[in-house]
Structures are given as C-alpha cells and as structure tokens.
Length: 267
Image 1 (cartoon, rainbow, N blue to C red):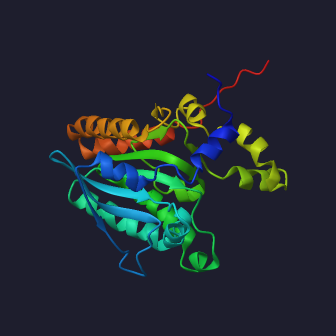
Image 2: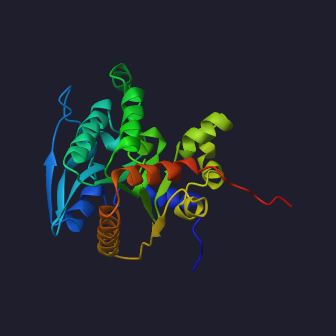
C-alpha cells in the first residue's frame, strides 16, 4: 500500500465528511448529557462539554465540535472556539476534579477563533488558563486527536496523561498555511510546509509526543475506531484508579518535561 504524504493526510483530516467528536461520543459512551455555558458570557458551541458513562465508570467529556452543513458550521463557528468555550471547558475540568471523574478530551479544530471580539474577551488568556488547569488536575486526563489539531486551539485540550491520535489526524502548533506564511511569506506553500512540520501521527509517535496511533480502516471504519477509543478509556481508567493523585500529576508532568529530546543522525 502506498504511504500517504503529509499533505494527503492534512486533507483527509480536514475532510468535511470526516466523523466529528459527537459521532464518536454517541458510540463510545453508554450515556452522554451535554452541559452548557461558561457562567460568564455565553454558551459557545465550538466546544461540547458534558457528563458521560461507560458501564459504571463516569467521565467528564470536553470535545471540539465541527459542523457538517453550512448551517451547522455557522452554529459551531466552524469548530473554532471562542474564549467562552475554553472557560466553559475550565468550569467542567474543575467540576471533574471535585467529583473525581477522569477527563476525556476530543481534539478537532483548525485553531481558536482569531476574530477581534475573541481577542477582546481574552482569547490568549483563556487558552493559557485551560492548559494550566489541565496540568494541575488531580484526576487523569486522556486526549484523542480525531481530526485537525492545529494551533493553541488544539493544544488547550491536549495537556493529558495519555494522548492518542487517529491514523489520519494531524497535530501541530500551527497550520501548514500559517507555517508557510511565517517562514516563506507565502501561504500557498502549505503543501511543502506540511512535509517539514512532523504533524502526522507517525511523526508524533516517533517523537514520543503521542502514546499510540489508532488505526483507521477503509470504508465505514469509525465504529472500529470508536471501539478502540472505548477500550483505551476503560484500560486507562483502570490503570489510574490505583494511583494517588500526586502520582497522576507527576506522570503528566514528566510526560511533558521529557518532550523535546531529539537526536537526528545527519550524514
């Protein structure tokens, strides 16, 4: 089988017909109850938060959600969260810690919304605070990159004990277009940029940024993917049940502390 290029994977991850967070949530969990609002400004629908259950295990779910039709995308702000989305997420992160529920995040966004209103309401601060709160949680955090994980909008939900990634997803601190615009002053060189950014699941697994690649199959594979997600959630829940909260925080700290060690043999 021909190996896909990074740019081909970028386009698969961005496919508007690709399964969204709610598609997986509705299969993975036995029950899911969505909760709304940041208790400060409004309920931004680019991030979905709620309580979920598998068997007798309870979770807090925080998921970036794209739309499929034009109407849905407008309602979801094309999956680009405003600050109130991150503040809503923070609210439920704290609630999860209070009630000792593991946090499950689904990452799928081209980035946080870059509009002037979002900046006026503190977009950068909201993203930074979400990352800070995740880093300090006393409960385990399990993240799944299911599609397009770009920029701080994705990283805001990615400070986790375990990070898993679908085979045809991408994950990076900036989009290929943004990279090309900064480095070469030409956003049209996005394809070339994608080949240099190490944003595919294989690249990130090799760099020890993610813990496992979830294989995607041809055809109606999302049910198999959902089954694998459920299996990993149950497996990790069992693992962390026996750990003290200090050990959970330390494991998360060490995971990120050890990133960046990379040696390339140049001949």
